Length: 174
Image (cartoon, rainbow, N blue to C red; front, top):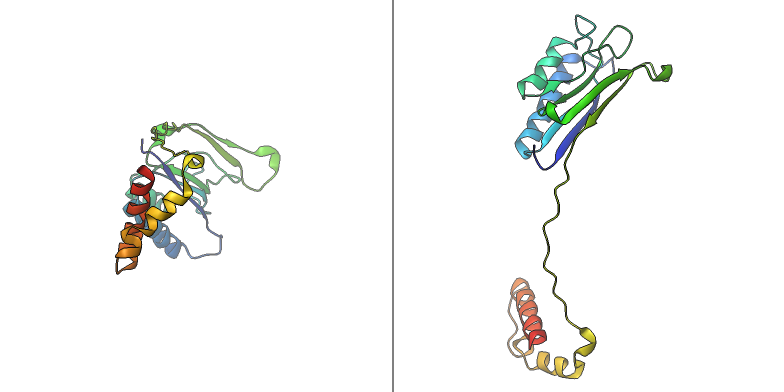
Protein backbone atom coordinates (compact mmCIF):
# COMPACT_ATOMS: atom_id res chain seq x y z
CA UNK A 1 0.00 0.00 0.00
CA UNK A 2 1.01 3.60 -0.48
CA UNK A 3 2.33 5.76 2.33
CA UNK A 4 -0.83 7.81 2.62
CA UNK A 5 -4.53 7.77 1.86
CA UNK A 6 -6.62 10.40 0.09
CA UNK A 7 -10.31 10.42 0.98
CA UNK A 8 -12.88 11.97 -1.36
CA UNK A 9 -16.10 12.56 0.59
CA UNK A 10 -19.18 13.28 -1.49
CA UNK A 11 -22.83 14.15 -1.21
CA UNK A 12 -25.20 14.46 -4.15
CA UNK A 13 -28.54 16.08 -3.36
CA UNK A 14 -31.33 13.97 -4.88
CA UNK A 15 -32.50 16.93 -6.97
CA UNK A 16 -29.16 17.56 -8.71
CA UNK A 17 -28.75 16.37 -12.33
CA UNK A 18 -27.18 12.93 -12.62
CA UNK A 19 -25.11 13.40 -15.81
CA UNK A 20 -23.41 16.48 -14.36
CA UNK A 21 -22.70 14.64 -11.09
CA UNK A 22 -21.13 11.68 -12.92
CA UNK A 23 -18.94 14.02 -14.99
CA UNK A 24 -17.84 16.05 -11.97
CA UNK A 25 -17.12 12.95 -9.88
CA UNK A 26 -15.05 11.55 -12.74
CA UNK A 27 -13.13 14.83 -13.02
CA UNK A 28 -12.40 14.91 -9.27
CA UNK A 29 -11.18 11.31 -9.16
CA UNK A 30 -9.06 11.88 -12.29
CA UNK A 31 -7.48 14.98 -10.75
CA UNK A 32 -6.64 13.09 -7.56
CA UNK A 33 -5.19 10.18 -9.53
CA UNK A 34 -2.96 12.54 -11.53
CA UNK A 35 -1.75 14.52 -8.53
CA UNK A 36 -0.86 11.70 -6.13
CA UNK A 37 -0.01 8.07 -5.77
CA UNK A 38 -1.93 7.66 -2.52
CA UNK A 39 -4.46 4.99 -1.77
CA UNK A 40 -7.77 6.54 -2.83
CA UNK A 41 -11.06 6.19 -0.96
CA UNK A 42 -14.34 7.62 -2.29
CA UNK A 43 -17.20 7.61 0.17
CA UNK A 44 -20.50 9.28 0.77
CA UNK A 45 -24.14 9.59 -0.16
CA UNK A 46 -24.56 9.59 -3.92
CA UNK A 47 -28.37 9.18 -3.92
CA UNK A 48 -28.13 7.07 -7.08
CA UNK A 49 -30.09 3.84 -6.54
CA UNK A 50 -29.39 0.90 -8.83
CA UNK A 51 -31.64 -1.66 -10.40
CA UNK A 52 -31.35 -3.91 -7.35
CA UNK A 53 -31.05 -3.38 -3.61
CA UNK A 54 -27.38 -4.43 -3.75
CA UNK A 55 -26.19 -1.98 -6.40
CA UNK A 56 -25.90 1.71 -7.12
CA UNK A 57 -26.89 3.21 -10.48
CA UNK A 58 -24.71 1.49 -13.08
CA UNK A 59 -23.58 4.87 -14.46
CA UNK A 60 -22.33 5.77 -10.98
CA UNK A 61 -20.72 2.35 -10.53
CA UNK A 62 -18.82 2.80 -13.80
CA UNK A 63 -17.08 5.99 -12.59
CA UNK A 64 -15.02 4.50 -9.74
CA UNK A 65 -14.53 1.28 -11.73
CA UNK A 66 -12.93 3.29 -14.55
CA UNK A 67 -10.22 4.32 -12.08
CA UNK A 68 -9.73 0.85 -10.60
CA UNK A 69 -11.82 1.53 -7.49
CA UNK A 70 -13.97 -1.23 -6.03
CA UNK A 71 -17.30 -0.55 -4.32
CA UNK A 72 -17.29 -2.18 -0.87
CA UNK A 73 -20.94 -1.60 0.08
CA UNK A 74 -23.36 -4.15 -1.36
CA UNK A 75 -26.42 -3.87 0.89
CA UNK A 76 -29.24 -1.32 0.93
CA UNK A 77 -28.38 1.85 2.85
CA UNK A 78 -31.82 3.48 2.71
CA UNK A 79 -34.94 1.37 2.56
CA UNK A 80 -34.45 -1.10 -0.30
CA UNK A 81 -31.93 1.10 -2.10
CA UNK A 82 -28.15 1.23 -2.04
CA UNK A 83 -27.42 4.97 -2.13
CA UNK A 84 -24.04 5.21 -0.42
CA UNK A 85 -20.63 4.32 -1.69
CA UNK A 86 -17.34 3.29 -0.16
CA UNK A 87 -14.92 2.58 -2.98
CA UNK A 88 -11.14 2.19 -2.96
CA UNK A 89 -8.27 1.11 -5.13
CA UNK A 90 -6.96 -1.09 -2.30
CA UNK A 91 -9.84 -3.16 -0.85
CA UNK A 92 -7.37 -5.25 1.16
CA UNK A 93 -7.02 -2.31 3.57
CA UNK A 94 -10.70 -2.55 4.55
CA UNK A 95 -12.24 -5.24 6.72
CA UNK A 96 -15.63 -5.67 8.32
CA UNK A 97 -17.61 -3.30 6.08
CA UNK A 98 -21.00 -3.23 7.80
CA UNK A 99 -24.32 -1.57 6.97
CA UNK A 100 -26.16 -0.89 10.23
CA UNK A 101 -29.52 0.82 10.75
CA UNK A 102 -27.95 2.63 13.76
CA UNK A 103 -31.18 2.44 15.69
CA UNK A 104 -33.04 4.48 13.10
CA UNK A 105 -31.18 7.71 13.93
CA UNK A 106 -31.05 8.69 10.27
CA UNK A 107 -32.95 7.96 7.07
CA UNK A 108 -29.75 6.23 5.86
CA UNK A 109 -27.99 3.31 7.45
CA UNK A 110 -24.57 3.79 8.95
CA UNK A 111 -21.76 2.33 6.86
CA UNK A 112 -18.68 1.39 8.87
CA UNK A 113 -15.48 -0.33 7.91
CA UNK A 114 -12.14 -0.96 9.57
CA UNK A 115 -9.26 0.61 7.72
CA UNK A 116 -5.90 -1.03 8.33
CA UNK A 117 -3.12 1.49 7.90
CA UNK A 118 0.42 0.97 8.99
CA UNK A 119 2.25 3.95 10.30
CA UNK A 120 5.77 4.07 9.04
CA UNK A 121 8.36 4.93 11.64
CA UNK A 122 9.90 8.32 11.13
CA UNK A 123 13.50 8.16 9.96
CA UNK A 124 16.08 9.14 12.52
CA UNK A 125 16.96 12.81 12.30
CA UNK A 126 20.51 13.80 13.15
CA UNK A 127 20.58 16.47 15.79
CA UNK A 128 23.31 19.01 16.24
CA UNK A 129 23.43 21.85 18.67
CA UNK A 130 25.69 24.48 20.08
CA UNK A 131 26.03 25.46 23.66
CA UNK A 132 25.00 29.08 23.13
CA UNK A 133 25.96 30.05 26.67
CA UNK A 134 29.59 29.12 25.88
CA UNK A 135 29.83 31.58 22.95
CA UNK A 136 31.80 34.73 23.60
CA UNK A 137 29.30 37.18 22.14
CA UNK A 138 31.81 40.03 21.81
CA UNK A 139 34.17 37.83 19.73
CA UNK A 140 31.24 36.52 17.67
CA UNK A 141 30.04 40.06 16.92
CA UNK A 142 33.57 41.21 16.01
CA UNK A 143 34.02 38.24 13.68
CA UNK A 144 30.78 39.05 11.88
CA UNK A 145 31.76 42.73 11.48
CA UNK A 146 35.11 41.62 9.98
CA UNK A 147 33.44 39.16 7.57
CA UNK A 148 32.30 39.61 3.97
CA UNK A 149 28.80 40.32 5.32
CA UNK A 150 30.02 43.84 6.01
CA UNK A 151 33.11 44.06 3.76
CA UNK A 152 31.63 42.73 0.50
CA UNK A 153 27.96 41.83 0.89
CA UNK A 154 26.25 39.92 -1.90
CA UNK A 155 24.30 42.08 -4.34
CA UNK A 156 21.07 40.05 -4.41
CA UNK A 157 18.64 39.07 -1.68
CA UNK A 158 19.12 35.35 -2.35
CA UNK A 159 22.89 35.77 -2.49
CA UNK A 160 22.97 37.71 0.76
CA UNK A 161 20.70 35.16 2.45
CA UNK A 162 23.07 32.35 1.47
CA UNK A 163 26.09 34.45 2.46
CA UNK A 164 24.53 35.18 5.85
CA UNK A 165 23.86 31.49 6.49
CA UNK A 166 27.39 30.52 5.40
CA UNK A 167 29.19 33.21 7.41
CA UNK A 168 27.19 32.72 10.60
CA UNK A 169 27.59 28.93 10.43
CA UNK A 170 31.33 29.19 9.72
CA UNK A 171 31.82 31.72 12.52
CA UNK A 172 29.91 29.58 15.00
CA UNK A 173 31.94 26.51 13.95
CA UNK A 174 35.18 28.44 14.53
